[in-house]
Amino acid sequence: MPVSPTLRERALAPDLARGLMLALIALAHAQLLTGRVLAPLPGAAPVVDTVAQAALTLLVDSRAYPMFAALFGYGLVQILRSREERLGPDGARRVLRRRGRWLVVFGIAHTALLFTGDILAAYGLLALVLAGMLRAPGPRLLVLAGLAGIVGASVYGAVLAVPDPTGGAELPADPLSSALLRLTVFPVLTPLNALMAAAPFLIGIWAARRGLLEDPVAHRALLRRTATAGIAIAVLGALPQAARTTGYWAPDTLGAVAAGALHTLTGYAGGLGYAAAIGLLAAHLATRPRTGVTGALVACGRRSMSCYLAQSVAWLLLFEPYLLDLGGSVGPAGAAGIGLGVWAVTVGVAATAERAGRPGPAEALLRRLVEPTR
Image (cartoon, rainbow, N blue to C red):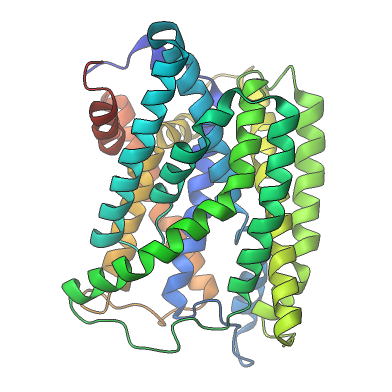
């Protein structure tokens, strides 16, 4: 099936951002291979693992998801615009809400079959609850984003203060028990992830209404300020949490909550800063011939849901006790290497699919379910 003209004409920056963002998602999820769940490194950890853990805390943890959420909000505005001319405002919003319902279904299936850390259902909830905000005035979007950011950071900061929520319990050693355990925590994690993602989701809507990533050249000054300030704020705000995760600081409960809240709140700035930085990169690349690496990253971004789910297949194979059972077998440095390797494989597969003119299977299925007549 040939790639449609509409697909070829898509703006470079959003797809490039999604492709690169999946590397951060892989780095975040691969940390499960260390066998630690929010627990600090032991005091005798090798230097390479301490450095890797510090880098992951400063640059990845609670920085990847805000970027993903902002891009999701940005994408919903693009979908709304593309449907309004044919379906009208009410019909377009119905499409978005159907999309949200099906994303919740996808998230349940993803959790049951593959992985605990689902975000599809959380974004489906955001689409259902906040679809009406896609046409809200800009100041209202920013005010609501600020309030959501404070609430989300406070709640998630308390979660990060928990040293090991599993209590050191052994993971189930059979597929059915493992799936039931994942589904047990699903009703807790999904609203929590939606709450954490609400602020960048709303800011993504605001950014899409101004076309910041469709025309990054025209908004280069704003993108440069956002990238510089956002990433700097994220790094500085993560320093207390990095001291905690590397074992150099053992705060009391109040200090741990404060460090986690600061880490999450400044992570919103970091996620937006990353998106802005990739927008600047896209503006730079737009004047140059498309390279194979850029094309592969864009192909991955166009199939971001399929590549995200493919990563979860890898975590299932690598992590589950009844399969390879590698949990606890590597440190943060090894987990980071594995994560980047998994991401690189998905990029290569996406590039192959692009050359063959094949859409991502998850995207194609979602499109058929949401708009069967298209």
